[in-house]
Length: 227
Ligand SMILES: C[S@@+](CC[C@H](N)C(=O)[O-])C[C@H]1O[C@@H](n2cnc3c(N)ncnc32)[C@H](O)[C@@H]1O
Image 1 (tube, protein in one colour):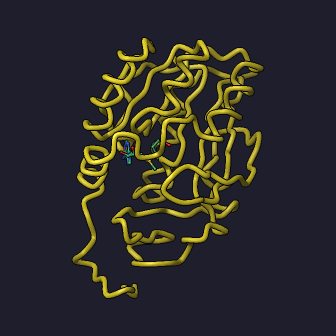
Image 2 (cartoon, rainbow, N blue to C red; image 1 turned 135 degrees about the vertical axis):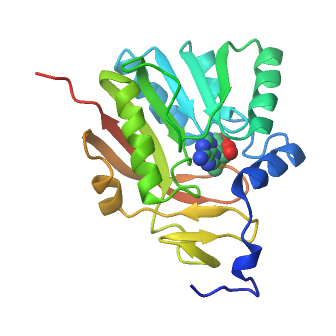
């Protein structure tokens, strides 16, 4: 591990505190518009007849609010209490109905098996989660999805301008100067982690929301329907 830009491992930040603090300072950290991923997911979710969806790592809710406006039954969780409080307030102001909770995806979901048509996350698995932790969370998503249900997610990939830059803090993980740890994924890693699912799509796209352009994979996985 080679710290860069004068940083040391002692500068590594607690990521939950980092998100709580960031959201407290900026009401719309990623802007108010839905993400590119949410727009493409909406078309697919409608085509597939999905209704009940769970967004994990929803942040301040730019996508959750959009999904509610599109008529889906939205459930949304994040481990940042600050994010969930802000989203609850915004949802009430905008008349958007959704069920919210504080939840860390390194733990089991408090939901029964086969209870959602789709699970959605934008830039969650690309946070400070080890491959083992991502694998656990993907297994949990598989458990709570109905057979044939979709897991739609995005992760920053190895073509991203920040790949391999700044302070190395783990396997394929670097902490950027803003203090966020990012886990970057190759297509091979995405496929390896899809065990138990059918892979429907892995496509590169750009997220142009603030504070900078990111290169990601859009991943669509399906829970197989038993014979
Ligand atoms: C890059 S932000 C994306 C937020 C939102 N999806 C969006 O695009 O506007 C990542 C989010 O994941 C949340 N997060 C990170 N690690 C988490 C964990 N272990 N469990 C639940 N949420 C987590 C953070 O609090 C943050 O809101």
